[in-house]
Image (cartoon, rainbow, N blue to C red; front, side, top):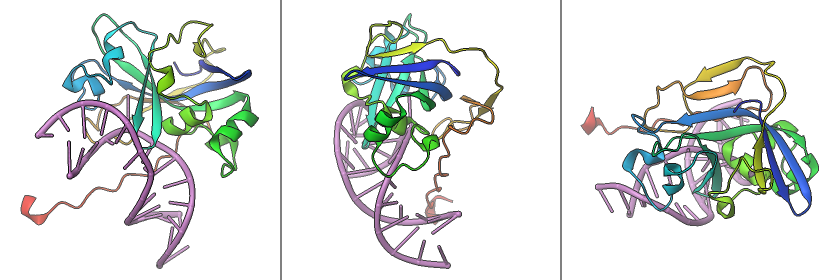
Length: 188
DNA sequence: GTTAAGATCTGCT
DNA sequence: GCAGATCTTAACG
C-alpha cells in the first residue's frame, strides 16, 4: 500500500495523495482490531470483498481503512498519512485556515479524511474502481525504505509491529504519546 | 516546549 | 454509562 496513490474526485476537483503511513489490523489474534469482538453493524464490510472501504467515526473524526483479505477473513489496513500530490489548495480549504505546512495536511488518519472529505457516505465503496469517487491506484517505483513500528493510539495489542511508513518521509504523522493513566494504588 | 480538555458516534458492560 | 485505531485549542513553564 505504501507509495500508492489515494485519488479523490469531489465537486469537479481532483485530489491525490501518496500513501506514506499505514497500519495493519489482523483478521485473528489481534485484540486491537474492530473485528475482534465479531461482526457488528459498523464493521460488517470487513467480512466481505477485499478492496472496499471501511470508514468509521472516532469522536469527531473519520478514519479510512482498506479491506484486505475477504473470504471471511476480516482484516484491513488503516491509512494514517499521505503526501499531497495534487489539489493541495482544495485540501487546505477542507482542512481550515490553521494549517501552516503541507506536511500537516494529511499527517494522521483523521486529518487525511478531513483533507479529502472522506466520511461515512463513502462506507463500503469499491476502491479498486476508477469510477469510484475514491480510488487507490498503483504508485510509481519503490524507491524508498519501509520502517516498521508498533501501532499508534491503541491500548490493546500494543506490541505488535504492524505500523508501516516510508523512511525519512516528512509527511508521516507525529502523534503525541498518550499519557498512561494513573493506576489506583489499590490495583498495585 | 508540554499538558489537559473538549468535541460527540458506536458498541459493549 | 464509558472507552475508543483523533485532533485542535488554550493554558502553562
